[in-house]
Length: 306
Image (cartoon, rainbow, N blue to C red; front, side, top):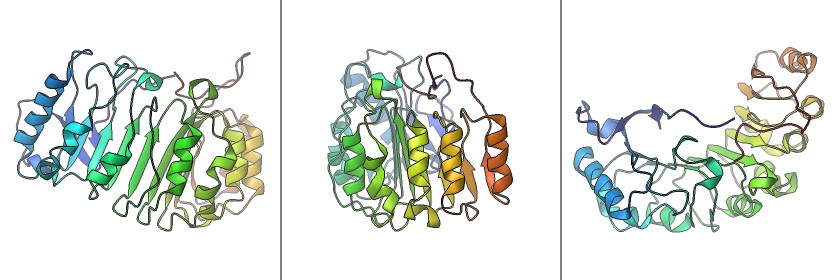
């Protein structure tokens, strides 16, 4: 399974294509989207599209920016330097999504990135950062007090990136979503690599935790079942992965989960009986056990890998 649709909203704002000539009522109240039609567009073409965003968004630039294909994303990293050299022109930027592509544009595990640290340091006012793809992705531990939401979507998230997130000072982070992926595409993390996150002390404001698209979903569920951070979450998301009866049993046998507003387990390999048991034992919790999968002869699979 793959990502086959684009978002229509981001950061609570409707997404408007920069090449859509219709003028929004309020240019500052939309998320502007750049997506190069030519998969092999060069840097000057992307630079021109970025300039068009700045022209249309008004003073301070866009409040939210969504970047799809920037040109040969399968072979070249996101040109973050084009944003960083014009920091003053992006003073209004609060939300950024890098790599919002469908599989027809670029498979998730082919999308190239680099070190996110300079970008986060250049935009301390950034509140939301979403990144799709993890080829070459790096992050150095740092102090990012403005960040409220961090989403890393991948077919295989390196343990080194998870450990770097764990080591960051993120006092205001409310929403953390990590797509762990599969070992064959770089997802080499084990539950132990999540220990600091699950401990919760480094993320005092966290209310939404997503450990999604995980080949090791049963192992993750067992770790989550005893994780201190869970007691103060509103939403727990273990969807899109290979969760089976063993993982679900561990969740139910662990700490109470009835305080949650939502528990998202959709796309799973639980038996019908176990899925119903999860729902029945968590009254008052919005439990999503939709999209039941059937284990194939080669095993279970996540929503996104390649």
